[in-house]
Each structure stands twice: as structure tokens, then as C-alpha cells.
Amino acid sequence: MASIHRTTMTPGKLELLADWLPRQGWYAGGAEAPEPIRAGGFRLDDPAGEVGIEFMIVVDAGGPEPVAYLVPMAYRGAAPADAPDDALIGTSEHGVLGTRWIYDGLRDPVVMGQLHAVLRGEATPQSQSESDTPDPTVTVHGGGAAGVLDVRVNRVLRPVEAEDGPSGSLVAGWTRPDGTAVRGVLATFASR
Image (cartoon, rainbow, N blue to C red; front, top):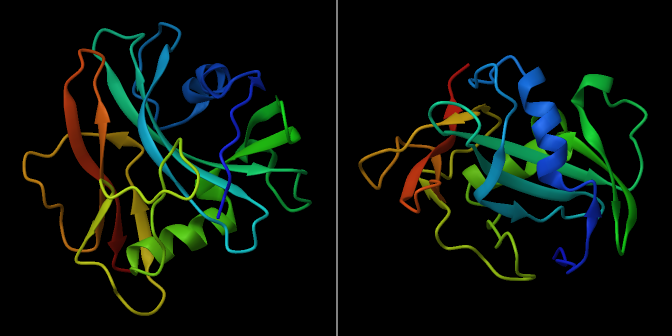
């Protein structure tokens, strides 16, 4: 199980995301600089214990309307030799673990492997801020699919009215800047 350290990261994750988000093709913000606010998320455990895995939900309050984004992140102790340069979100100095290379989780094989495991019912989402604590608010609807399936991840999140998402979907909540709690579909199995 991953351990959550109560320490600093310099620069912080939100600072790195403020620079990284506008460079993404799916970024829905305007010309204003993004103002990402941590709004929710969860962690997954790497069975090998090498990669930190976080699915962070941030709300960009910098535009005319707040927009929620899902940013899966891989925290690594060294840059993998085969990692594409454009997958790097940035580096940060962790107060306990030293330099961390933070990658876009959708471009990281360990993160994607664990996302598949969650959707198949083989891994348990963990609290974003507590060690060894499952997060029961993150749910999989109609999961347990066998075999290797493609996964579609929603980068820009929209609230869903009903509690249940479509079959084979990962559903979680976040908090809007006005304090309203909402839920949405983060990822689904997709047919090839």
C-alpha cells in the first residue's frame, strides 16, 4: 500500500498543472491563465510499490465558467528511458522522497494497468489523503469485464444526474468552487 507523506512539494502539483493544462488539446479554458483548484480524486496502489498513482480532479476557476478536469498522474523516482517528453507534467522536490518526475498518467503503463484493474474489480480506489484507506465514494458500475478492453477517460468532467453511470464505468465526486458536491463518469470500458 502507498504511504501518504505529510510534507511539501516544490513546485506544488497545482502550480505544475497551471502551466501544463493550457498546453493540452482537450483544455477547455479560455485565454485567461488557469487557476486550478483541487476538487477531488483518489489514489491507486502500484503492486510493485514503485510508482505513485493519483487521479486528481481539479476545477479551473480562471475562466468565465468553472471547468472540472481529471488529471491522472504518475509519480516516479526517476525519468523512465522510454517516456515521451510531452508526457512529463513537471518535476517537483518532495520533502521526503526527493525529486519526483510527474507524468500524465494516461501515458504511463503502470497507471493504465491499475485503471484497467479497477474497472475489472481487481483493485480498490484509495483515499487521496490517507494511507491504507479505501475510498468507498469511488464506484465502478457494471465492472468485472474479462479480457483486455480499451478504456476511455473523460478529461473534461461533467456532472451526471443519476448515481449510476453507464455499465463498465468509474464514477467519482468532486466539489465545485461554490461548495456544491457533484459526481461524474471518469472512465469507461470502450469497445474496440
